[in-house]
Each structure stands twice: as structure tokens, then as C-alpha cells.
Length: 284
Ligand SMILES: N[C@@H](CCC(=O)N[C@@H](CS)C(=O)NCC(=O)O)C(=O)O
Image 1: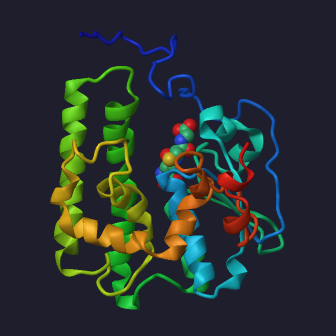
Image 2: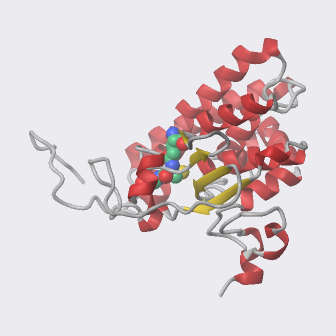
Image 3: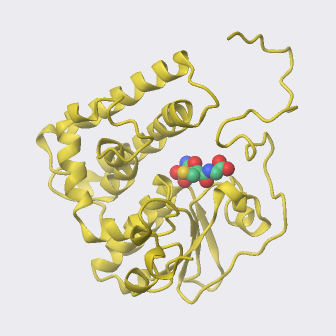
């Protein structure tokens, strides 16, 4: 297979693959659609992908830690159907990607986009899951590491391994190598630590787990064997510890549209929804 790039790239054809019909080289809304607003102070517009799960895990951890002010409505944005290009969503996030939060705790609604920006906004407001004051540089470092690194795992490895129209050796090799290097970074860091900051569980763990934890637990792109994830023993131990936390399990269910019906809570508007509104109970 060979390709000679033209002098000027033009958008004249779908590029194929799982997301081919959605991707565009321009920003902005494609259609008018207001966002729904529920009864709680926080309105989350999201989907149960790793970037969405970071935020729902934090909400569930805050609520479990007794922060009752962190009640939230989680509305489903189906990115496969193009909901992220509706006018209301674009107002909440001009980058048209989930998750987006509208904070309605003050006199005017305030938007927050980018998953870790949402996490910092919430964790700082309630003074939770930030580690000790002296951990701040390490916390910021790992949060930024996550935001900079995960696109190589998702947009790079996952895209070429699972979504591209056909397997291509060069990009799969390049991103498999980088994904394994990143897993090794985590594995070496976690060799003598329970959590990313040491003894204290923080938003760094919650941000990293949905991507790298789920990867070593064999839940990402069906690539556990391909990437030999069993090699990363410290990451695996840490990933299992987070997986066993009830708020993490709940956060993983919110806005989830795949997997077992009892693990899918398409929208979350009340704590009781986990018991009564999962897809095994209300699905068609
Ligand atoms: N850096 C962003 C990435 C968000 C992101 O990539 N979201 C994906 C789902 S995981 C999305 O909405 N994709 C839809 C699209 O690209 O049209 C964040 O951390 O919030």
C-alpha cells in the first residue's frame, strides 16, 4: 500500500474506519439542539468512555466521601450519533468532545471542559482527593502526564489497532511501542507505591485508571494479549484495587452504552438510579 500526499490536503472523502463518517476538519455546531437541564447543581454531558468515566468516578467518590453538594445529573451524549456537534453542547464545549460540565452552583451557569479541568474544578472546590499540600507538584505532573499521554493510547494505538479500515504495520508498531513504554512508566512508578501519590488516593489515580487500568484489566480494544499487559504487575495490582472500589464501579456504569446491560446506566439523575434504571431493568 502506498500513498503520495497531494500538495494541499482537501476534505473530499470520508477517511473510512469506525469514526470515518463523524470526523470533520472544521469546528462548530452542525445542528440546533439545546441541552437538557436537570435538578442538581452539576449538569454533566458525557458518555462512558475513559475520558467520561474519569469525571463520573470523581462525582461518585465525592458523594461517597459525604460531599452531598456534589449531586449531579449525567446526560448521555452519543458521540457515534454526532450529539457533540449540537449547538447546546458546542456552547458547553467548543471542542465538541465529551465530557462537558455546566456548573450551576452560582448565579450564572459556568462551563468547564477537558476532563481533568473538570476534575480539578470539583476536587479543589471540596478540598478532596488532592493529596497533601506538598504533593501538589507531583499531582499536577501526573494529571498533565495523563492528558498528554492517553491520546497515544486511545487516538494512536486504539485507533490503528481497533478502528482503522485495515491493519497497518507502521502505526500499530509505533503506538504499541509507545503504549507499552507508558505502561512501564506507570509500572516502575507504582513498584513501591500504593497509589500515584504514595499512600493517598487522589484524582491522579481516577484520571489514569480509566485508560491504563482498564487496559491492563483487558477491557480496552481487546488488546490485552497483544500488548502482554500481564507484564505490568504493579499497574495490575493498582488497577484491581481501584476496580474493587464501589464508587469506581458506579462511575464506570454512568453513561455507558456497551457491555453487560446491568453495567449500563445510560443517564444518572439520582443515587437510586444504580439500583433501578440500569439497562437490564429498563432496556428495551
Ligand atoms: N482531552 C479531552 C479528550 C476528550 C475526548 O477525546 N473525548 C472523546 C471521547 S473519549 C470524544 O468526545 N470524541 C468525539 C469526537 O471526537 O467527535 C478530555 O480529556 O476531555
